[in-house]
Amino acid sequence: MLKSIAQALEPLGLLLRGGMHVAPGDKFPALPDGSAAQTLLLVGNAGPALWRAFAAAPEYADGQAHPLNRWTRRHLDAVAGPFGGTVLYPFDEAPAWPFGRWAARCEAVHQSPLGLLVHPQYGLWHAYRGAILVAPVLELAAPAPVPSPCQSCTGQPCLWRCPVGAFTPGGYNVAACAAHLALPEGRDCLGAGCLARRACPVGADFAQAAAQNAFHMRAFRDAVSGARP
Image 1 (tube, helix red, strand yellow):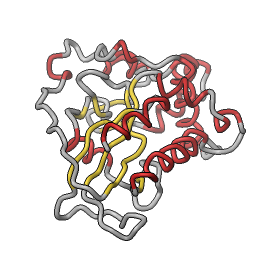
Image 2: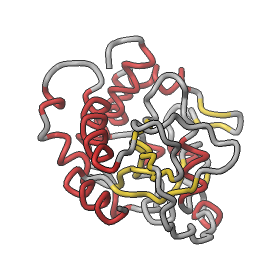
Image 3: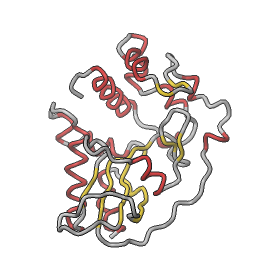
Image 4: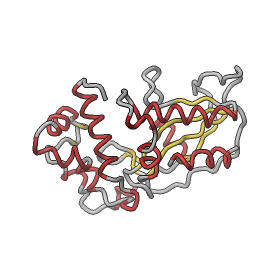
């Protein structure tokens, strides 16, 4: 099953990012046939592969809201269906699924100084798109214990690269970041991606193209401003 799901995800630029067995205290919906899920498979992306697939899809240019979310749901539901699975999404409004906690159980990721999860290979150039629940107890490889790359990062440039100092010990100043994007001085961040994120030296080979970064920055700006993303 793992191999078949990974093969189905590959043309979409998506990856199996590890998995976990359902533990006491985990609360998941029943599968389509009414049975209980025993395994969660985390699905995500790294680098520009997803963008190439999404940019060629009808959702990308149809002018409707949330194109990437709709594209993701269409494809992951189709991947999970033949295996009797169901998919949970990070963009589901209720309930808000704890993808960060699941990620820590599935692979070697750590909290970065920016608050984003940093991966030892992908750096900050990765994301989680969904979690597939299936009935079988699948054989899963335990995530290797890898230290955070931030511990050995000289100078941690991500912390001082933000032009408005939006990343502080007290947390992320969303309002300051969004306000900067609305100004002429914010065109670099808006058009090519967050300068703080781009300053991270980890995973440079997986850096996203400017168009992909701009898509996500515009979606963030519109969500904060209340405009339709």
